Amino acid sequence: MLKASASASAVRNTRRSSDISDLQTQFESLLDQVWRCEAEWRLFDRIDAFCASQPDHCGVSTAAGEGSRRLKS
Image 1 (cartoon, helix red, strand yellow):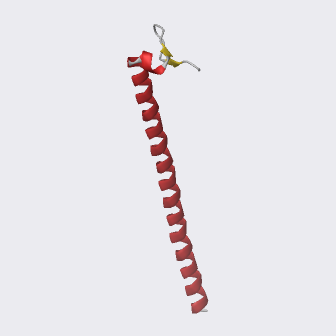
Image 2: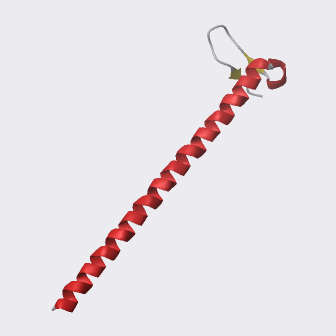
Image 3: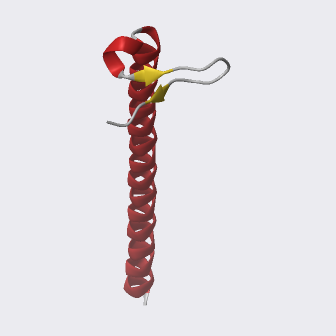
């Protein structure tokens, strides 16, 4: 009977550590996705800033009080 309870305890401890590792993996995946999205947003912000400063190169029309708008070709 002691062996059965000891093995059940071992299973519980193994399950807990795998659950923790799974949560860690999910958290790292979520952070990675957030960082990738932020990098993409910064890229688009840099493109918009360039287009606003060089409208003749980007085909951008700007109006007072509005952000840059890319013209469709």
